[in-house]
Image 1 (cartoon, rainbow, N blue to C red):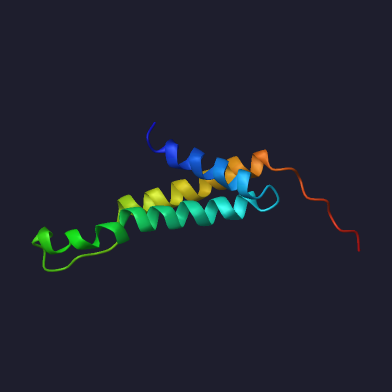
Image 2: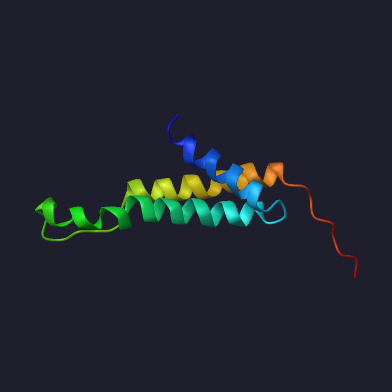
Amino acid sequence: MPVFVPVVATAILAFLLSREYAAPLAYIGGSMGTLIGADLLNLDKIGGLGAPVASIGGAGTFDGIFLTGILAVLLAGLASPPRPREVW
């Protein structure tokens, strides 16, 4: 259940900010939020790991980025109105 909290929050916020561009905004916001929250805010803890090599990211963060981005796009895309198609 906790994995869906950022997804739903990102989709709702993107939909409130821009109905027309909710899906791309949800993807960018979800992906960047996960990267910033999981990686950049924890840079000060790298020295305490005791490992000779530190890798930013990893499978856990990638899964979070992928799930948040893709699912937020799906939720925001379902809620946003369809765009009219241009006739050539």
